[in-house]
Every structure is written in structure tokens, then in C-alpha cells.
Image (cartoon, rainbow, N blue to C red; front, side, top):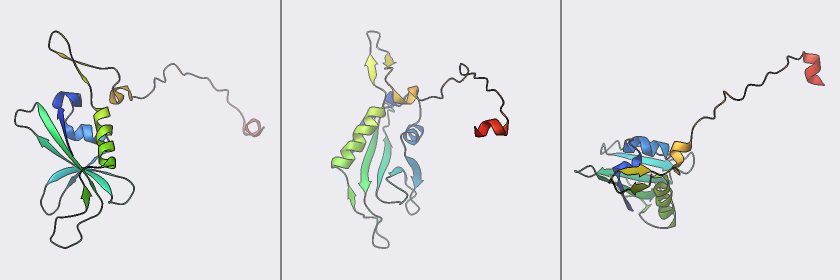
Length: 145
């Protein structure tokens, strides 16, 4: 499944950095030296979501080519493997990635603004400067009771 997005929806980050934040890991195929990203379901290598990034020459758009790998290629020297390029799981993952993208709101000036509902911008460490609690030092005997 191909997902077409504008580069400004990544929030100024590179596609690799944005995909790492989305849970994907950078991988390189040993045989073809082709770069891609994968997101595993569990500790095993398969099944996994496998994603290729294709940049457009004008740099305004890029494509995520997403599919679900079921298993590794069965025969030596072959690159064919069992994969789904559409279906319920692939569509669900595509919807998850679309939800993580920044929405583009065009105003009358033609500039883009970012919606405050962006999940990646809201994730930050809590401010602990306001939480100053003075704990009374207790002896080991007082800690028991």
C-alpha cells in the first residue's frame, strides 16, 4: 500500500527520524543493500510491517510503500516471500501512520500552521520543578511501623 504525504507533515524532521518515533527500525538488506524500515509485532523477526521510503524529485511529496511480511524467503537465492500489500492489518497500520502526521491547515496568507492535536509534540517530560516535597528523615525503626 502506498501512502502519499507532504514532507511538511513530518514536522521538519527527516523521514527516518519520524519513522523511528513511530516505532520503526532502520534496516539494510544484506543482499541488495536496499534501505528500508521495519516494525515487528514481537521479539521474532517475522511477521513485521515493512516500509520503503521513496522521495520525489521535487521534494514536496514522499511515498511510504507499506506491506506486511509474514515470513522470510523460503528458498535460497530468492527474494520472494509471503507478504500482504493490502488488507485489514496493513490498512490499520496505514491509518495509524496517517494519525501521527501533522495536519496541514492553509490560511489566507498561504502559510501552513500546525494543529495542537499533534501527539508527538505533546509527548514531553513532566515539569518537576513544582513538585518539591520535603520528606522527613526517618530511622529504620520508624520505617517498619
